Amino acid sequence: MSVCNQCNCYQSTGFDIKMAFQPIVRVQTREVYAYEALVRGSDGEGAGEVLSRVNSDNIYSFDQTCRVTAIETASRLGIQEKLSINFLPNAIYEPETCLERTLRTAKKLNFPHKNIIFEVTEHEKIENYALLVEVFEAYKRHGLLTAIDDFGEGYAGLNLLADFQPDIIKLDMALIRNIHERRVSQIILKGILAVACELDIVIIAEGVETQDEYSYLFDQGIDLMQGYYFAKPLVEQLVSPYAK
Image 1: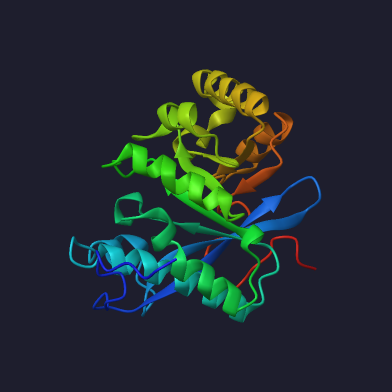
Image 2: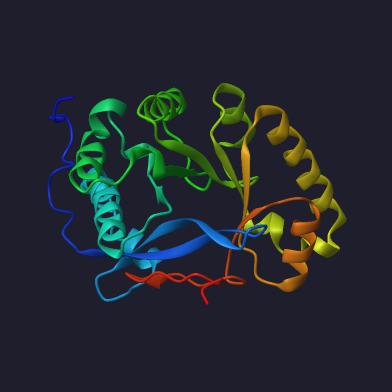
C-alpha cells in the first residue's frame, strides 16, 4: 500500500479528540463481547458537537484520526475484546490506501486485525454506493469484521445487504424502543432475524434502555446487546456491567 496523495488525510483536523467506550455484551454468558469507540471532544464534548466541526476540508483527516485514536486508546486501556470503530463512508478515496494507517497502527500496537469491527451507519447518505461495497470487501480481505450500524433507519439497509453481507447488523435503537409493546416493531424484528439467520449474520441490539426491552429481546434469542441498560460510554475508561 502507498500513502494516498489525493486527499488530506494526514493533515491536522484543527481540533483534538478523545474516545469514549461503551460495552457490547453477550447476555448468555454475561461477558463483554466488544467495546464501541465513540468520538468525544478533548474536554468531553459530545459526538454531535465534535461532528459539527467536520467539513469538506478536514473530513478525511478526521476519519483517519478517529480510527487511529480508537486503536491507540484501546491498546493503552488494555482492551482484549473486539473494538468497534465507526467510519465515514464518504471520507474514503481508495479503500486499500485509506486502510493503510489503520493496519499500520494495529500492527505497531499488536492489536489483532480480527478484533477490529468497522461500522458504517445508515444515518449518513452514501455518495458512492459502489465504493462502499468495495470498502467492505477490502476490509474483509484484511481480516477485519464489518457491520451495518442503525439498521432499519436511513439510507443503506436492504440495498447494501443485497450486494454485500456484513458480519454484523446492529439494529437501530428506534426499532428497539419499547419493542415489548409495539407489535409492528416485533414483526419487523422477526423478519430481520430470519434474514440474518439465512445469511449467517450476527445481530446486535443497540439502544437497549429498560428491563422490558431487554427481556423481550432475550426471549427472541438475541445474545448481543448494547445500551444504557448495561452501561453508558465512559471517556478513556472501560466498564463491564458484569464486573464483580
